[in-house]
Length: 171
Image: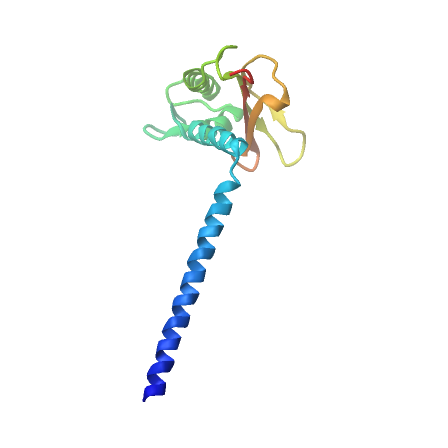
């Protein structure tokens, strides 16, 4: 009986050592993952989250019926197809108004501020043929590729959007 009890104690000790090693390994993995995020990743994360929020914004355009209002993402596709809102406005006009309001309210642009400009461009990419930029929303000075925080995102099989901010290196 004594040997059986001693074997059980050794098994419990072994399990505790394995659990302790696993916890230490998880801590090291967590530290490694966090240290990989530099300022560039954080900056692009900010731009990516802004673009996601903007594309999900609900507009005041309902294509089929009210209250089925389209998001900016849906309106980009509807605009390219020349659709009309139930209010009688063209989808492209509502898209222009909405995107300009969002961009103006979100990013204060000036040479003294951290952001000196932006560009938002929906692109139509048919499976056969060349990509076409059908609307472009710019408010920027000439900024080099090194001053940009840029994100490109597909929104459907035929459409994508690109968005970049121009950073002020002096601020």
